[in-house]
Length: 240
Ligand SMILES: [Ca+2]
Ligand SMILES: [Ca+2]
Image (cartoon, rainbow, N blue to C red; front, side, top):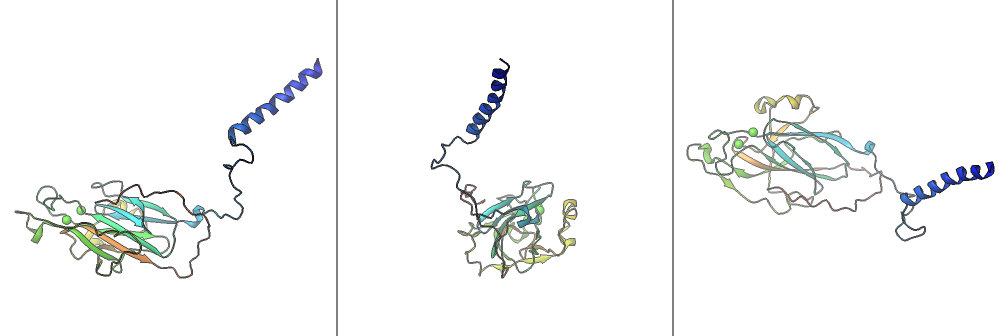
């Protein structure tokens, strides 16, 4: 009798273990959907990433190597900083759409006022915004700064403007502005933007939607990891 009870208590945990194993691994052993061995696969870790931050007056979305990687979570006010973890692959093409707050029909804000823009970015690999970036305005107004009878000029986003192989040779250089001219709000000073310049087009006031591009080269840079994404993240359509 004593013997039997011992046997039962010993057998029960074994049965539970078998059940738990079956729940965790529902595929038949040797079946085609079992995980392949991952020997030789090197996965990236957080140590492979670089940290960055971006501040836009008033809003931005950023693509890296053709992929949408960051969207400013606050469109108008308050001004905020977006912190970004990036898994860098070089050459790295950064493409940004930045928008000053402006009415689509008048180019004004608060009724008949003209607001100004500004964009600043810094990544831990040394990438910063400066006058080497390319810039293109796609929404300008009010024309001539005329707020009494405001008119605007708009053009569609160039096809594939955020893709690495897009030809931006006809775009102007970005123009760097002083911190005093931009007058950023407090969140800017709570992050490390040292060495980064404020950029926009030549017209900080009337150019309301601006595209930026920058190709970052890192000769000799090698990826430590071997994994490749299989998923399709192209769902979010380019913003307009
Ligand atoms: Ca404006
Ligand atoms: Ca603004």
